[in-house]
Image 1: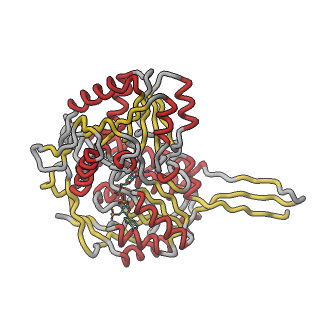
Image 2: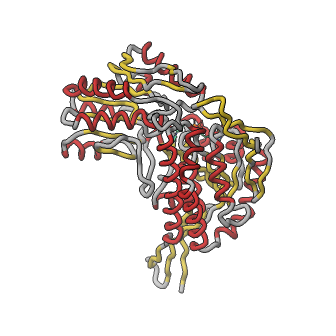
Image 3: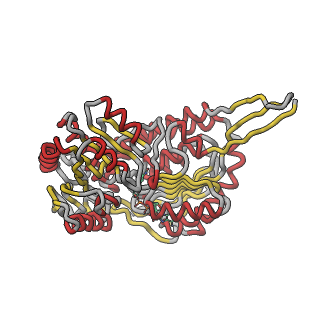
Length: 478
Ligand code: NDP
C-alpha cells in the first residue's frame, strides 16, 4: 500500500511512523497508510514556513486570490471522489460527505474574493498635519489544529483565510482522519504557492500539535477540538504570547414551544440531534420541550427514529452512518449507561447494531424525563444521543437553555414572532436558529460561540480577518 507522506518545505517526506486509516463502516477496510511526523519534522515545517513568510506577505492580493480560486475549483470538480473518501474515513453518509466537500470548495472561492477585498482606513489625526493609516498585515506563521468530525471543511475554513491574508501555514489534522486532509493538501501543493508557504504534518497531537504550540516562530494557533485539549493549548499560547482562537464543544439546546409546527419541530430535532451521527459540535443535544406539546413531540421523534436507517456510510439507503471509532463508541455507550443510572428513561435506541460489515453502528438514543442537572445534560457526549427536558413555559425553557457551561448554538421552534425575537435576544449562544436545526450554517457569515465553547475572534466570513491579520496604525507628518 502506497505511503501518503507529509508535505514539508515543498517536499513529500516520510515520517518516523505510520498511521493506518480505518473505515468505521467496515473495520476490515484499510483506506490508506499515512506518514506520522514527530516534533523534529514539525519544527522543520515551521522553519520552512518562517523562511517563506516575508516574501509571501508581500505577494499581491491577486496572486493569492487566483491560487485560492484554483484550489476551490479543483475541490468542487472532485466532489464525488473526495466526498466518498471523506465518508469512508469519517463515517458520515455520502450525501453529507459530498456536501462537506462542496462547502470546503466554496470556502476557498469565498476567500479568493476576500483576498482582494482587504482594505484599510486613512484617518485624520487630532494633531494638525498628521495623517494616520490603519492597515491589516499578516500574522506570519500560523499553526492550524483540526478535529476529526469535519475532516475537510474545518481545515478549509482555517487554511483559506490564513493564505488569503498572506500568512504561512503549518497544518496538523486529526490523526484519525488523515485521508481528506492529505487529499486537500495534495491539491494545495499543486496550486502554485511558493515553497514553504503551506505545510502538512500528520501525527499525534501530543507530539505534532504540541510542537506547534511550543515553537516561538509560530505566531498564532487556530484550534478546533475538545474543551480539555483547547484549555491546555490556550494556556500555553497565553504563556508564550501567541494569538489563539479556539472552537470547542457544545451542549446545544433546541426549545420546542406549544405553538410550534409539530412536524417541523420533530424533523428539526431529529436532523439537529442525529444527522452526521450526532458528531457535530452544533448538534441539538438537549431538546427542551414545553409541557403542552411534550408527549406528542416525544411520540413523533421516537416514531421517526424507529424508521431511520443506520448503516454503511456509502450505502445510498443509509440515513445515519457509524460512530467514528471504537473509543468514541465506548464513550457513547458509557453515557447511555450513565443516563439510566441517573434516572432518565431511555425512550429509544442506545444499542450496538450488527450490520453486514463489522463497524461501529449505534441506534440513535433518546432519553426522556431528564433534568438539566444530570451529567447527560451537562457534558458533551458527541454521538447519536439526545435528551428531552420538560419545561413549564417559555421562561422556564429559556432559563434551562442558557443554564450550561457551553454557548455555541441554540434553536427554538415556534410560530410566535414574540418568542422567536425574545429568544434571539436572550439566548446566551453565539449562533441562534429559529425553526431550524442548531447544526447547519453558512460559510460567508461568522461562526463561533460564547462561554466555554469558544475563545478568540470568530471564524469564517469576513470576520475571519480579525484572527488572521494584525492591525498596524501608522502616523505620518506630511
Ligand atoms: P481533540 O481535542 O481530541 O483533538 C483536536 C485536535 O487537537 C486533534 O488534531 C488532536 O490531535 C489535537 N491535539 C490533541 N492533543 C494536543 C496537544 N497536546 N497539543 C496540540 N494539539 C493536540 O478533539 P476531537 O478531535 O476528538 O474532536 C471532537 C471535539 O471537537 C468535540 O469536543 C467537538 O465539540 C469539537 N468541535 C468543535 C467545533 C466548533 O467549531 N466549536 C467543530 C467541530 C468539533 P490527534 O487527535 O491527532 O492526537
